[in-house]
Amino acid sequence: MCTYITENIDVTGSGKGAEGWFALTEGTVYFDHPVHADAEHTLNIDLRNPGRGPGARVAVELTADAARALAEAILKTLDAVPADLLEPPAPARAA
Amino acid sequence: MSEATLTGAFTSGTVMISGHGGASIEAYTSQVADPAPRGGVVVIHHLPGYDDATKEIVRRFGHLGYNAVMPNLYWHDAPGAAPDDAAAAGRAKGGIPDDRLVGDVAGAAEYLRALPNSNGKVGVIGYCSGGRQSVLAACSLPLDAAVDCYGAFVTGDPSSVQGHPMRNITALYDKLPDLHCPLLGLFGADDHYPSPEHVEELEQLLAKYGKSFEPHSYEGAGHAFFMVERPAFRPEAAKDGWERIAAFFGKHLS
Image 1 (cartoon, each protein chain N blue to C red):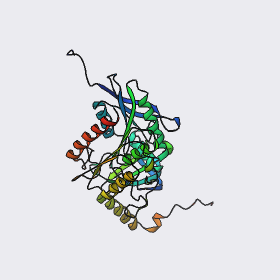
Image 2: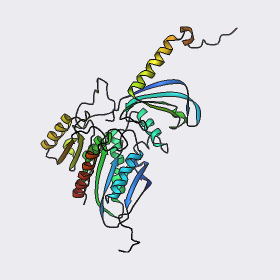
Image 3: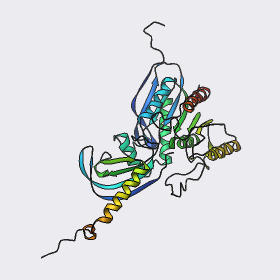
Image 4: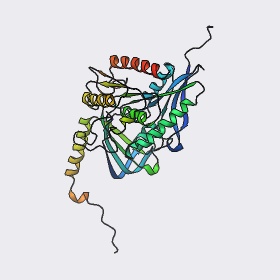
């Protein structure tokens, strides 16, 4: 079925699309029929910058197992990072 | 007939048509060369978009002798974008609003009726999410025949799928009394959305409302059994389904 299940998130970072690198502003995560992957349903992620047009998109279609492995790898990696590296940069102070 | 005579010819390509609210939207069409009057078919693509597989279905209707047109339902969200990028943009906005879908199908139907070899009759067919939208269109517009290929949430509860809330989608219980035309339904017996129980509920409701409904469920088939490039493809169900579609439109669009 076309599941309609969709999660939208705000994103800060960059991605590399068909025309090179660009700033990312939002992401969409959904589980539905893929465009290209050889599976009936996949976990699909679109990382986008609508301000640069609909083609400013980095897309992946992952099997459910691959998507879980990716999510776990992301969390495992972030958990291993020293906490002080995860804090946002301090604002510049006047001398 | 001379050896040089070409019969059964049709031309396929991309056109701009008038969609919801008078907006100009892209559409893919197949148009039969024979000037003899014939019916038309509006093809509704599935949620992943205006793709090659559904364009092949449009051409199949040309081969069957119908004029056909498939509006790009995501054109409003991202005009001119690649179809997969447009589908992603539409998805991020919450999908295709029902009123916009009805407006786009109305425009596509008018496009078909205006063709010089139209007999004035227009049917609609949709796959997956388009199956539900085909029923929605047939309940909202003066069409002559409708086909629902495994559309989820014509009946059933879209408020949760495996505990997850579904956004921007409602079942069509309040629309079904307004079904304007005969409906053919093609389903997989192994499908969960719609399940055999959902199909049975639809059959009971349409019988109660005095509507013409021909449901067929295929054993050994699940969702999307018409999709030749997907693992769900089931040749026997798809072949029989196409024969039923041809007979159904042959009866109601001639």
